[in-house]
Amino acid sequence: MKIINIVNKKQIDNIKFNQNQILYIDSIEILKEFFLHISSNYNEKMIPINKIYDKIDIENIMIPDKCKILDNFGYLNFKLDNFLIIYDKINCKQYKEYTIFGYCEDNILIEDFILKNEIIELIDLKFKNNQLNIKLKTNLNIQFIFDLYYKYHNIIFYENTMTQILINKLKQVNYTISTAESCTGGMISSQLVDYPGVSDIFLGSIISYSNKIKKQVLGVKKITLEKYGAVSSECVKEMVDGLYKIMHTDVCISVSGIAGPGGGTFLKPVGTVYFAFKIKKQIIVKNKLFSGNREEIREKSKNYAIYFLTQHLMSIEEG
Image 1 (tube, rainbow, N blue to C red):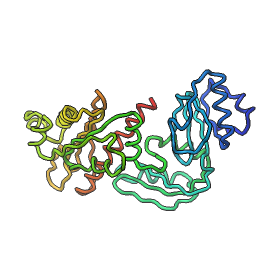
Image 2 (tube, one colour):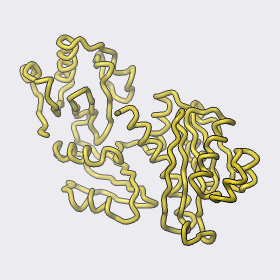
Image 3 (cartoon, rainbow, N blue to C red):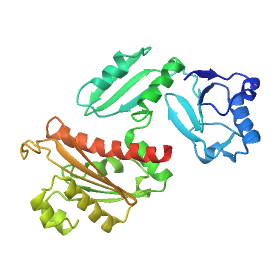
Image 4 (cartoon, rainbow, N blue to C red):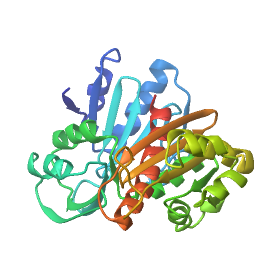
């Protein structure tokens, strides 16, 4: 899909609204004209941008209220029906740090992002526990940025950490959250409370490390533990249900796994971790097999819980 560089009002008047288009705008005046054009021709309700986005100083600009904002790559991206509008808010003349967060047990992600694409200048790269942090120069070709966005839009975020993005998203949709943690021992909740203001959405955590607490506090059935074990989809489902009965939060997370170095079996080796996410009435169960030592497995488990929930909440809005 080709990017159209919009530089004057005449181009806006000639836009075909029945086609998927990508518009690149580097002038605030043209951006205003584009939104006014939508309002006058398509009867769209307009609201001040600062009602839904407070991280950019754009005075007196009104945008369609159903316009979704994506803040990536040093560009402010507006998604509206058939359009992706890319506004170059920083003119790509400075250094910014990007965080890429994804899950692979090898370096495929690094090779794909770094080696198979032409990044102008790589400043720094760190890879630990499946989280890749890249610092690079932002004066990149806009087509490259677009291609990269559509290839990795589920794992690339601009500036903020994954946890901060999750907290912002929970606040945006007015969801509260709680956790029931076994193998992570409170690492997920600890990660959340590292951020000021999280008390608006985070109620608390139950560290159900022993089966006794799983049964007595969370209500996991004795027969479930005997038949399936503490590290199972059945157990984390009952953990998350029990957590909801206690906390009554919009989002509940439970996790149980084998961090090692012992405790693994042929069917459930060390690194096996089960997660349950209760989001409103929906329960989603995931299981992962992480490599590494005890510390790395626990860290990856914490990261995955935050990663999956963030992506799921974003997909609900985007869907």
